[in-house]
Image (cartoon, rainbow, N blue to C red; front, side, top):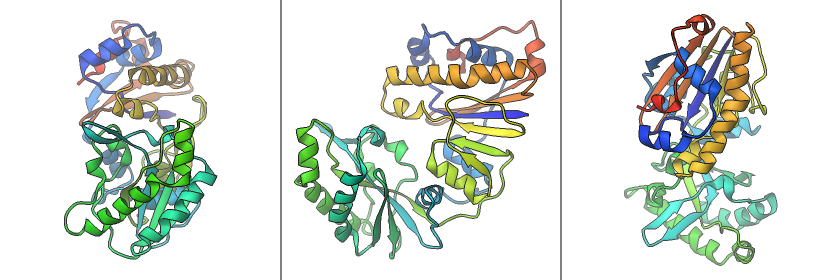
Length: 334
């Protein structure tokens, strides 16, 4: 039995990591760090790791088609584009993307806004509101050049969300018209009166068709990321959302814990500490207990930062190596 923990957002610069976790109690994580063996991971980014795991080496992850599949919609052979409602923070430095998960945007609001915006994008395709925060365009034209993953833009200048070049000009025009419409939309006037962030743009990203993914080297995937679950479904792999905590399962299980990612992107150290505590108490500690009882033979922790990654492997017999000692989390820094 083998557990793989895929954890984006865990790698920080050493001093920042030390200053953030110096007073946290992380005995299970420190045991894993001290008794395990570290190796460099060839895939520098999370996206590369997922693509290689599912043998999609030469393509970008088509997030829109994968997300639709996980949401129960067959994307067919059409090209799809994510067109998510977002809030852009405006200040003297310009506009930056806020975390969409913090918007408190409900079904009724989303339906009203989608009905108003759909005609502005009709020349490009059909605008679908599949969940309040997950909108998709079924394209009837070639897709624009867009980013692969919206999370890479959290807290960053919003200019990176605009399709570039001459080919992107019609898209930029439509986005500008959509922003003007949203500025005076009754939905946003009501949200503003309640002190909620307004929905002031759409984020275009993740274009592509449904891919043909290969079976990865594990038996099941647990993730709250619908894009990654869609990738598992392409490979006909058993998949579901994360449970509240680790529960023993036979075979090879991969857990995608992404609770550290948004706080890392938004430079929110307090939320990052909370997510790290959840990771320690609900996942690493029970997994380590399962290893000590003989239910798990190996734990692989694959950690990602902005531009690099590493793998930490702990086998059951490593716990018998009395000359090793627990290690602080800041030793993970690259």
